[in-house]
Image 1: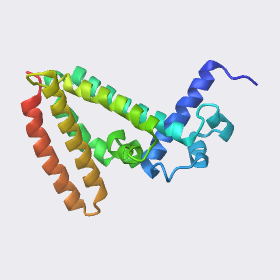
Image 2: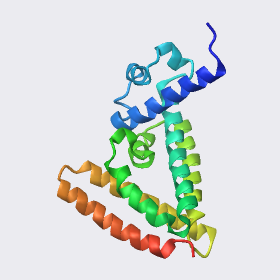
Image 3: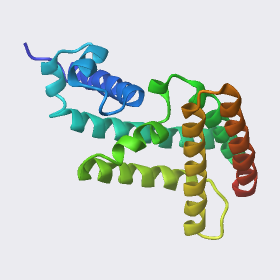
Length: 196
């Protein structure tokens, strides 16, 4: 039986969404093909019809996750104008920090596995990360494009690292203290970097 192009696209999307969620939740090493196919509700054959390997699915999940971050930044800029950065910091340290790990931002949840990935996956990550940086930088103040990019890199690293630390500790009070410290610093940076 031949499936329609639409059905194939829906299946690929389901597999990719399941892979992204599972890799965020369990890490690359904790996620096998059986778990991926079960989460997506497809057979192994359907999985291999879209991806040659778990590694290829991971690379695609990383690309999709970083693209989701880039599009989120773009949407916040469109909805909030000059106040986009304050809204981004608040969202990132709020809902994106407290959601289920499988729904979290790809930057803190997938980057550790990318460091151990093959060269193709790392190259794809770099391409997508540059796009995220460019999107964020285009909405920041600065005397040059290089300065805006540097500010975007610093802010993304601060938020991503802060969320990682806040999620990693078991003491809720310490977690909240980390978030509050990051929020103050990021808020200060945001107010000085928002496009005038």
